[in-house]
Image (tube, rainbow, N blue to C red; front, side):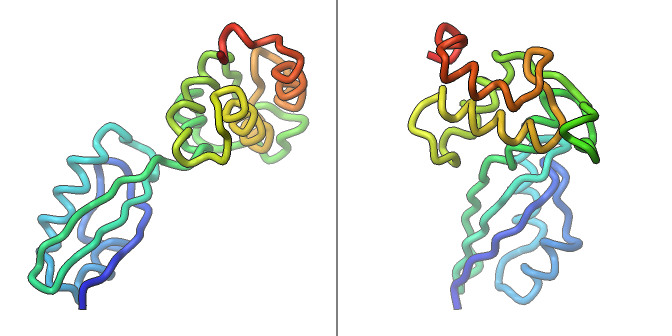
Amino acid sequence: MAGTIEVLVPGGKANPGPPLGPELGPTPVDVQSVVQEINDQTAAFDGMEVPVTVEYEDDGSFSIEVGVPPTSELIKDEAGFESGSGEPHEKFVADLSVEQVKKIAEQKSSDLLSYDVKNAAKEVGGTCMTLGVTIEGENARTFKQRVDSGEYDDVLA
């Protein structure tokens, strides 16, 4: 009856309650051990929702794989705001530098469809646009055009 459980947990603050506890309850694993291991592995993502996969065996053994938080969570953490704009094309909630966009792109590179940092940064820029976050003080819509024109080649190389 080995199985896999996939959940989103708050970084470093998982607990035996929902969503984790009800999923782990019927399994042969020690719930508290799983929670402690998840908290140890996700401590660096404090305050962010982190995808976690728990694989368990019939004998109670388990392994944990921690994913990278969603791009929107990384942007919120980097820019220091709680929620995106209700009108993202008109009201802006934060501003990121190109260096910050690059940092987020590098953190997410394994999860993105892009094959290099430059294209990954454009994907992050798209998420910025939906959240109401500007890049270098300008609407994120223009970021892709500026990247394509080579304006940020020195930073995103």
